[in-house]
Amino acid sequence: MNSIKTQMNNVKTYPNFTVYVLTTCALMLTLAIQGTIQGNLEITHFLYALLSCVAFAIWAIFDLKARKSKSY
Image (tube, rainbow, N blue to C red; front, side, top):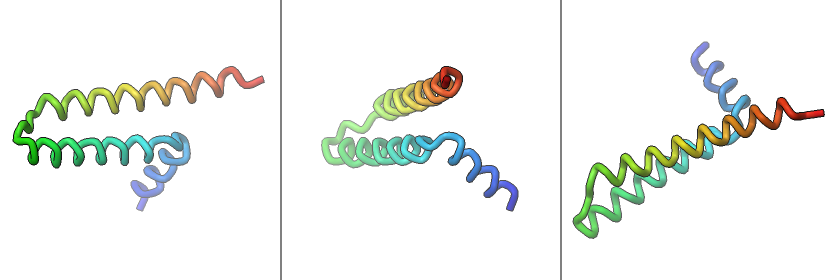
């Protein structure tokens, strides 16, 4: 039960967290479907997509912290 409360607090702390998780899942699913249809499914595509999603999530967290520290 405490882990659910912890997860909910994380979502409240970082409101874009769920957006980034869902976007990452959608991107991975899209890559899997497209790669299966075209026959060029490669693990490197998934690694590049995962890396870019993590980079945008880290950027959003730093941006959120920077905006909180600059509030007047």
